[in-house]
Image (tube, rainbow, N blue to C red; front, side, top):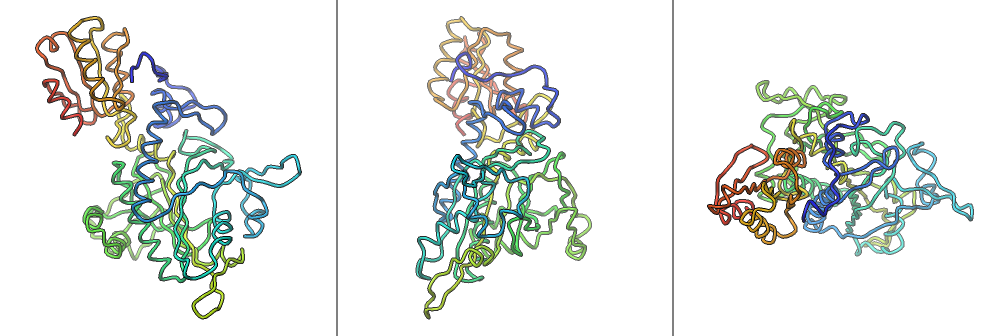
Length: 430
């Protein structure tokens, strides 16, 4: 993509309303624009990040055997009355009345709707277990939207739901989802610590939150310095992985379990701040019983399925990644989710040799590079490339170009390499 033909409206000055790094940098790097309080338009570069994150989430859900579907954003109030949550949910739910005076709502979550869908289709124990997910925009009418996409009102979420015959099966689904989540975060390029959590409006007696460590996190995090997911992720042994994740101590400061913390050697105890990017719940028969969803069991008796739900904040992850990975110059994207893997910086637009090398690089790197072909000063090109956070910068100037050389810069470390075009391409492609 050519920057001269792109809608990437970078800003030199920080907007007054932006209070934290991710909000400032998302606005300055031209990723989003605010359209109303807590509601953002995702511009092309921001949308590319959102799509890459969603695709990783989708691939790991598919690999775990979860079936993708898509539910509507607008839901019937009657479904929520069946579960008893319509009046209990609070003002965060945006309630709507259509022209026929039917009560609707802009869904903040989908436990009721998925229960109704499965209830209409699944009648026998032979049809269970089932695991389903979708990636969908949701709305919660936050009283004080702030911090950009970290606490907006409209947000993109992956939410999944499991249905099992008994608690044992439901716990297997829960463990499987925790493993899928940790694989997802590892592929994205972030460390997310699983922590025991309250179940809140969802209900149930087992829940974990996943927190990305960042100084601006709203929650305190206590964790073991030996926290590692690598070995368990590599083996794929769900039980071993779950045991490892739940015995390595981590908790928010509001739920500090002194007995567990004391098991961690003092020299390995760590404290930090975390941004929640996902949460999983096991809540048993809370919805199946209240919504009268039963299946015929092996002996002909009615069985209410055991359920769980599992959310990842796809749009929230964009802000959390930036909070965890930036410097004074701008964003430092993990390779897997950067809007562009590389930026090509032409330092002498109009020089025949420089232009030829840049055009060749642009053609060979295809859609995953941004070619800065503008008639701008080199200093501005460097500054904007750092601001946008491309993992690699391929810098092409007339002196090096005359010798078939380019300069390659790694954004995360600042390392620079003088390389041939072929070697530079090989390094960028990994």
